[in-house]
Image (cartoon, rainbow, N blue to C red; front, side):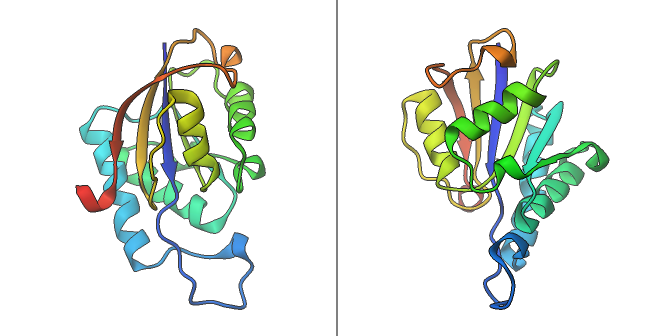
Length: 163
């Protein structure tokens, strides 16, 4: 059994019209919510063994602040461009590539791909606002076993506004 944690990046700023989408930073709410979600991981006993993040500035910053909030070493965050606006299959491929030997992996990326991934893996459609965190139990022995047809169980969903 593996645990997949899925986190949509925290709220980003649209205040810099000259910036490329990939380079948009977090806004004040994002700067507040990201560490809170890290603290939640710590409180729930869900500190990841591996943290994978999109290379986009808003996702990288979210991952760094979450890592600091939960005690994950920020120098161990794995950044991959494959998680920038990913399709569910992109997420699965990244997990198969980087997941072993870890039991609990946190993926920080973007919508709509993350909502689609949650639905694909659990059969349940859920809205994931910025900084939403999902916990899914997956009935697999290795990350190599993860397929589009794998059916996991949604254990929990946390949205910052509900905390």
